[in-house]
Amino acid sequence: MTTRIYQVDAFTGTPFSGNPAAICLLSKSQPAQWMQQVAAEMNLSETAFLWPLSDGYSLRWFSPITEVDLCGHATLASAHILWQSGRLDATQTAVFHTKSGQLTAVLDGSWIEMNFPATPPETAELPSGLQAALGVDPIYTARFGQKYMVVVDGEQIVREMQPNFAAMRQIQARAVCVTSRATTAGIDFVSRNFVPWIGIDEDPVTGSAHCCLAPYWAQQLGKEDLIAYQASARGGLLKVRPSGDRVILRGQAVTVLEGELMA
Image 1: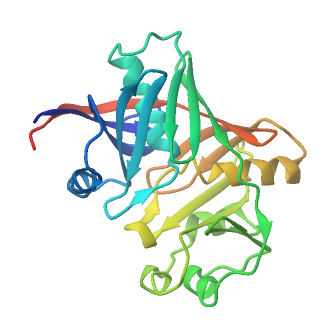
Image 2: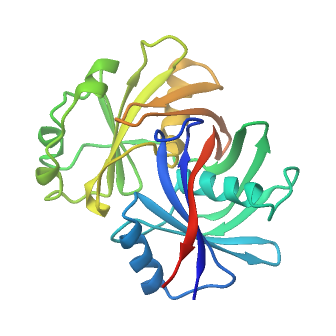
């Protein structure tokens, strides 16, 4: 069996930045074990698998060690490939059926706009040991699902923090996002996202985390349309807007590799 596979840098218009995702275009569903093996082989934060349905595409995401319920950057990359490869016309909406329900994406010039479920934060204490492992002093902590949000007082704190990932792996959690109001001109807020529990110490740019960050910062800053920067080593830019129980995420994408998977 040969499978068309692409590597796309998402939430960036520049190669070798943003968040890389592998995209496997299938003709039909394949066993989850095979998908997990492919994701481990690709060794990226996420590998997406999609195949056509009568009303869109089925979409699943895998990290190198587990399947995930929602992934923004690999959804962005999947939509980008559907348009780039001609499977969808530029005027058509990409419709994905996923573990997190139906997700859609539309193309607007060089930007892709996605419609995701909002996950507003709920005030909560951090699990024991997590603050020490992060090495920061929060001014606010919250939970969204099995994930945590930590707000700190300063963009430089976010940019310069060096978590203890070995310690983090001993704590019961799924992900933790550290964020602050931005001081860089043209940016509203910055963040970094750490997920050592699913095989990735730091995710370069995380669309799903902004389903929590967008409603939080929209309320804090008193504005609807926000510019977000995820301050990982690769870095990535998002435009976000809360919309009721949904969040609009906008980003760019660029293909850096195309080939065939021979197994």
